[in-house]
Length: 473
Image (cartoon, rainbow, N blue to C red; front, side):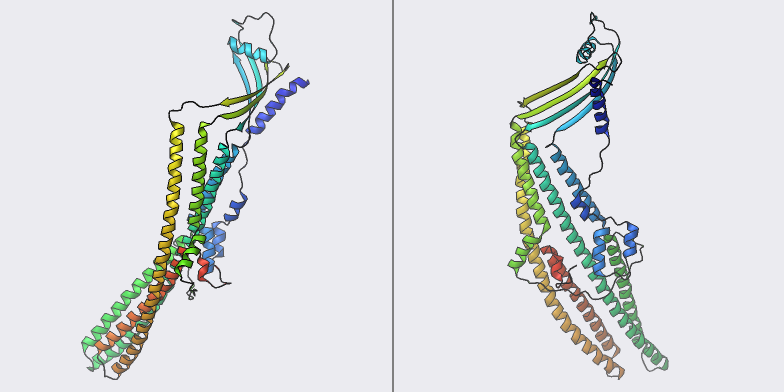
């Protein structure tokens, strides 16, 4: 094939090459966040009873909200890469075949292919065929860094999505933490109510025998039966509460509600962190990922506002093309055609479009700044509320522990007096009820203290502050 015919072949090959579907982009940082484990593999990792440490690890792999957040990071990453693509030249190809009866098309194609016949009637050249290919390239030489600013703004938004993901992860872990604490507290309540029921049932058997012998009043037996019924009702409520908490844990872990899951009932020991308001707020300002996300969004809004003003400035573009064509069959291409053009463009009137873009960008920038200030105030409020809740929980636990100790001693004394006939059944039931209530209050106070610690760590943005060194979750 002659050299001049290679032009068409090269352009055609380029056309098909650039027309191939591009491979899926893979982002290194994002892939480190994404978990590749399938559902079946993760389910095999669960060993009953499930402890908190394993549950927190599974949460990152299985929770659907986390998977959605990862997709949002991927979306933001793709938008940033889209913005970056405008910094590069644009290259495209076109291959064509035409058959027509149009004098102007015949004239231009014949001239471009250097195949203009002698004495042709251009008023009526007749039906003709032509084919060819063209390679085009364009590049924005200067547009006052508008594309670069768009890319930087998209990068800041992508960083914000990562910080938002981290904050959501902290909130989900805190929710799982609280669910574990609720489950263990419900287990303790169930045990306490079960023990109380067994104690009353034992006494009921004894009184029933006495009633049969006429040594006790039937009213005493009825009172004990009523107390057994109340205990059974409390046990039913405890079991339902356990099932509800277990269901919420399964949902957090992305498991089917019918999955046979059991929870480790070992007591969760937490560290009480420093509680100085100023130092805790300072730590929260450094640790809260949603605050960092708000700062990144503010930067993105400022960059977009800066870019909007440059819409009024002219743009310099370079456009080039290389083409070849032939007319009326054959492959004898006589010449290749090329063009290079430097263009200066300046929009003069757009109906106020640029003005309102600037106005929109300004509002977004101001809104982002106000949101950041508001978030700082809310963080301070959350920290203060968490510290007050912690203080209240400590005082409640101290009071509940003292009440439990007194109620326990009183119940033991009255129980002994009742056996010896020195106390009535009413006094026995009253003491037993006070003991159960005190036990319940103590369990709930312990739960409140632990949950207030989780609430504080959630407000600060660091769950690791609950654990000693070497026990980080």
